[in-house]
Image (cartoon, rainbow, N blue to C red):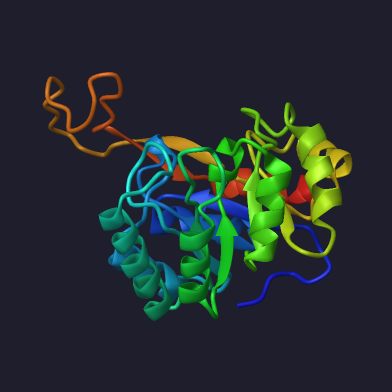
Length: 252
């Protein structure tokens, strides 16, 4: 289970084991396994982690996020995060993806340090909670000091295209201390310009398509989630073809 050494690394964010396997088939080097991507991703089930580990030959990283919303966690939520890290480690994950802030918009140094120590020997990525910090350079220095392996960022903008200038500055400041991984609407059409404009060596993306449900009987007025997204009869899955196209563009 090794990432391609000497080539640009492609990580794909997925929310199911099926999507994880599709990402692998498309040429991903690594997957970030999540649940509930509607809210930006929360911790997947132990069953999903276990089956993904059995099926995948590439790196498996697991997001550790107990709920949607902000990254200011209660003591109880922090206990959940620690338990989930232990579970991910026991189930064979290669890495975890964390993010925890203080109310003033700085990195929660004490609790991040505790999570990093608990995670070893897995690698640790600090997710886009980084993009919610008040000073990205201060945050980078803190995370590097704490031994975090990489930062996922869109340059504190909605997309990597808009945040490219900051991403480039972060790459320069990071030097060899910590890896900067770019994200934010990175697709086949813009991945090369993102890489060339920022100097990153790792890209985080998705490649979803909508699959119509095979249910023949449908009770349309009933929905399990919010009324604004009644998605009981459609499924979003990662497209192997989209990932393969992104891989080809990245390797040009």
